Length: 433
Image (tube, rainbow, N blue to C red):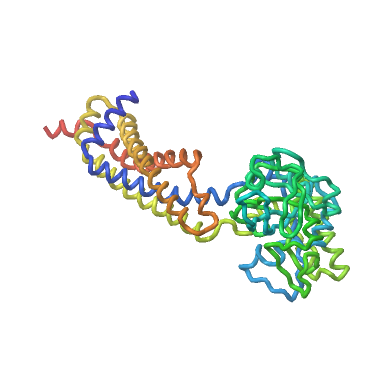
């Protein structure tokens, strides 16, 4: 029976090629525009660590003096968006979580002895050894540096696969020495090229370039390396200053009880710092954010992207209204045919299903056209200078969503015309004869 309805729908569409083309074009434009922006939104609001993010939390402390005024635009981006070295070290030493990681990022000039490789500035992270198991960074050779390196600031480094190949070619990088800045570091491990999107562990989370190296945080502090994100509110701007923030901090907590206990610990720590005269703000300003909550707080999805997504969906709605009008005109033009079919025994359900399948065919054709339009739209997004632009690619999931949405929109748009068509009285044309 389905094949019969499909044949009727196909014949009906071929009888009105211009109207059919207009409806397919309307669906394609509406779907293409909306899926372009929904794909960008999907990429920007995605989970950077699926399977792990639910157990990762970002402590928030507020050591800013009361005299420091934060504008609404600075929330999540001001000096209290990061932790100071004394606060991060205190949280590390307390060991209240299953795992804890403090991390800062910086650019260092790499010097290679390999012919043809010129000195260049590369970005990397200064962190603690739990960074690798906590975030699931896959090792190819070697291991994270030993715990003693975290305490002593040993000059060791972990390289990414691509960076190691650039420095040493096909030679084994493990155990070799690499000059970063003015210091030599011994390679203790090589990891696969790893780039979570967005780069959540950076102080100012973004879609910037991935890290090329990882070295102990204590080594960065001892060597007074430069961080690429620093903010302060005092005269001392050194890395160890209690008035200079530059570190992100993450803790792994596996149960609701651990989350509640850690939250109390943060409030108590803030109270202790206030009693010591270092904090001025209320202790209950201390917070514990889940990974996705923290990204939302930092405004990872710009308001202009959200606005464009809503505008695209509005355009899809306008296209849907136009399709309803076109389908209604088309179905009502078939009044005579519908009436005769009713007289020959076709039920209202049969008529409704027939026109529903016809609407679905229009949606399928519009969806295929919409995929092409969306791909063009995503290509145009990739030409923009925004840091997220290069991520604008349609994956398999969004491809399926595009086709399903197109069919759903056309079927929904066809409900009213199909319902109106199936209400036509049987044998109307026969009575006029």
